[in-house]
Image 1 (cartoon, helix red, strand yellow):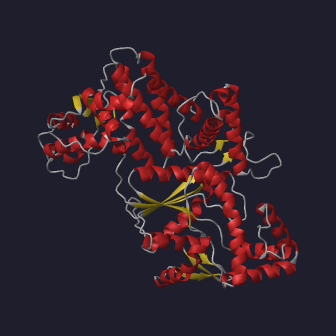
Image 2: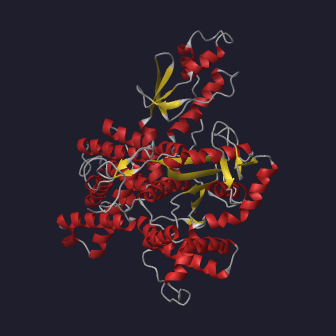
Length: 586
């Protein structure tokens, strides 16, 4: 009997069975990987026959054509309780029909042992996900919202898959703008050190005022430039002022992270600053850095403009910091996969500094070999006018206000449905938060991240179609079916058995079992929308099942209640990976 390990990942488990057959069919081709994919005429299919035939043609007289290879693969399959039957289609595709009994047992096992047993197993142990990364003294905008939501979901999926994730907030907390901000602080608030209360309420406005002074007043500009030197030289007065400004910003950022339930560890540009000289020196020693028009640069093959790592005034820039951060992550944090989540507009910058790291020998030239780096680009958030999303006064939208509006709109809908009379104030607010914040996250995540998407509250908060509201309601309805049955579901998990006798039960069970391979695909391709699509389809499969199969008060009640519970468990894990809080009552 073949070993069918591999967690809940059907594709991997089938691959193990077919691997045994491939070894027996073509012992001379030891490195052939089983090609298993969802099937058109079966549940899955094995697609090795054609490529295998072209490899062995002329070497092996036993096989006349791809179909004969497919037939041999099928004949050499070891006995397996996973597989009910196989057949050959076309030029050698092996169609696989999974065993109903085995599918039912696998779902039951998950209910008893937990959804963690269906987590995929990735080949790495530690990754860095660099996301959110706003700039100090500036408002977080909807671009940061996308980076925060997408980055958090990628981190959650990797963590679920057994990877230790270093969630890094690479904030812009260093650079020439701080000279201007510090001098303006000294000027506006001479008593700044004695203030019990931090004097600045609106940092964005403060930033704009200081920038105006910097642009219009040459004396102020000179003072600001000197302040940068004092700050970088470590003078305590300037360091303290810098810390105050950073703290004000941080407390604003945290309001957003708190609402979104996002955990991040800040390691900003200033953290890497002390390491820049030694990193640049090592690159220089390798002959990578050259002088060009007064600056120090790295030339990149195929690019007209080189990567500047030291500006002509001797200052460092994004490239010097980003290269140093990458060096730190590889050498100090020992990360195998480093993922950067920023808008697609920065693709060129990442391409260039990834190339530089390859030239330095830090990374392999083959992008599939670890340690590796990936830039996760995303499109713009648009307003309903098709332009960049802004307020009416063309200001950048404050994220806190945006999230609060989503919450208050969903609260209003719940009140209109009379929930304020049924529920406590706490339950009303918690449900409004779960739905409001969940709606904003899901509207972003369900799109392929590379596309632009239109921010529209009415669409997000619609309870029909592919929205968080529809899915949260669907989950709550499943919970309600279980509650109304009056049965103890925990007890049923231990004593009851699942049977997938009808086509609808079988289709729901089979689709649910594809959860693990979907999470794996979403991790490997860094695409959260793959998981959203699975979640929505799962709810549709459940609807077909519920329409055709009465659950309560029939001989199959125990089995069908367990199928309801298994659907709810998988939905809850999808919500968890998307950073959405489930709703149990509606």
